[in-house]
Image (cartoon, rainbow, N blue to C red; front, side, top):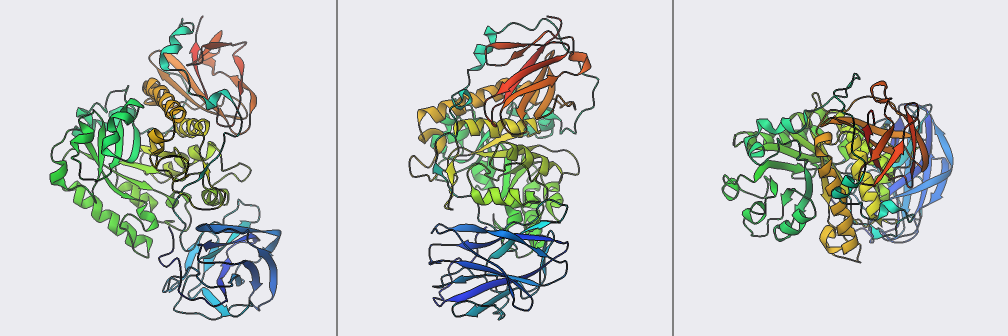
Length: 581
């Protein structure tokens, strides 16, 4: 979320800062601020102790884009619990971001505490800032690493910009996974399974119930959502006129429809399902249309967006509660869904209310664009729940988002993971356009970790192709996304089944499923490339080979183990186990 006042009219040179303390011993590794093109000039940052002694200085990278920018200290600075520090930067020509009446009370985010009146300033050419004006927030933050614990800092005690759009970047490596996967019909060319598999004698992961979950919602059930061969593949805020083209690409649901004057039946008459946004579509416009299977309450309410503009997380929860109460009162056989952003991080934005938010819903969703947004990468990298050794600009981040959302559910419920298909309206430095290989990797990482649906964010501003990147950014991109969706649809019966717990080997990220008499292993690496060794569970150890779904090949199994190669960090393989063959 951007500042309410991104550009202050003040044009004087001023040092802007934020006072803070930490709960645990650790180090400050960087300073951040929210930059806009109006905040011009070179920006120097300083970390101060409570007496005004400079502990470190650093210069921010140059640029003019809008969003959070980070300057990493060459040498981290040790900080003590309870001591007061100030992080500041000089805005040489004004035009900085400032929201009054923000620090009217103490704000705590993870291990960082911002006291009442935390925002401080000093006019001139720099120096220790001490003055306070109406408890303003100047959108400055620090990157903090606790001792013997994961890094815990990220923007911001203020709020962080929502994903904008990246620039088209070439694929990082020319691997075969960058090209469209073979269509499902090609799997018929591989050897047939000669043995069948019943349920496995292994523990199962918590499960929301698969396609049968939607039996309680008459509109969804009537639209085929209880069929095990149906798996939700959605597009966020699609244009009504694109319905047929998106359906041809394998998308079956609109999570929100642009309210451009078209009738809702423009979408539903194509056979597409719709989750209508309650803030734009009236009940009279929706009526009894059987293709409208749900109501979309809000987008990122926990961040103060989607009409939830309270300054407190309890206030934002109250607004979401009122939305849910209004829709529940309709009792029209439709499920209730909402999407979340930075609340998934478990830090500043909604540290206490995410479970309450999810309890209001039947289905949730989450979006953080890890492949394309440097700001999102920083948010994840310095989140206390992220494995610090991993690269956040990877498919693993999308599976991690699913894992994080599951921690907020008191009982298992379906959660869908967003994946960008272009440059998702980013403006920050270093932004990129997601590659087709990365799209596939993000989708399958989310599914391995239990995502109950895919949500594509297609809006794009990379300047090289259209706003609607699925169908306006070239035939190669469209074909690749179509192939990804075809394989998800092919695997729907397995995806709609429970996941068995089994460790196949080091360096592997897997999901083990049983469907229609076959065992399936959906696999990626935990990062990196190269060969991985799989050890099958005892009930499958007598297999002599595994079929690699949609790749026209089999892999030999010896003494219950087999090996296969992964060309990129986003490469996935699906193995169908052949028992007794």
